[in-house]
Length: 320
Ligand code: F6P
Image (cartoon, rainbow, N blue to C red; front, side, top):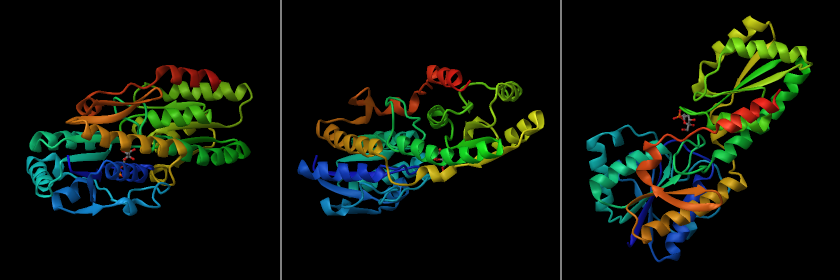
């Protein structure tokens, strides 16, 4: 192993830059050369590859987004795209590739290994936290805190105007972000795609809550839990309350990474380089308890990570 490549792929996540910095500096510490691949797999297919040194990653540990840029790449899902990307790895004499991204990016990485035989290691970074094999991902904690910062302010209006606020957070297919945000915010209801809910019951409980003295409510929902504007309309219709919708959207993907996201990024990045040096072929860095672990890369995107039902239940109890 003499030269490694690093790429950020899929949606950006706060802490990706810290992970790039960690990969580059750990690799240099071990005497490796490093190249950065721009614009995710799209850049790999186009051959947008350039050398990185310790100074290339100065002053980025605290910055959101990714200095390497990223893209949603459809071509990497095709045989032709994978072949072109694999050829470019070989042309550039890249002996190992570190992919910073989510489950979709790891599926692409797996295909790349199968086509090229060049070792790949994944560094999980997504605000969705929907990667199996790791308890958390780079960017998740930042997105949770960004959401809390905003909902704390929404709560002021909710209280003053005695309103119900439905706050939609990202989560393309999964509700990990909504659950963590709702739990930490003390939301009255949390709507996630993994667990059934019914608007009629929610409305009944809203009315019961008002009878018991509640004057405003926060409902946190994952974008994948349903159509938020329809849900708002229906709650309005069934309760007659003043119900408003706030969609937090991409605001949750940006901003300076929290301490937790940076620490994880530093650890995952270094671990990924060390895995390549130890001869790993297709692995992913993960965290279990307090420990940084290595897991099968295919497990990360083939397995479905379970949502914490106990946490959900506790959120229900605490919001009564
Ligand atoms: O996967 C991260 C994520 O932010 C999802 O929560 C969201 O559904 C999706 O990306 C949005 O993707 P894009 O920015 O490409 O529209």
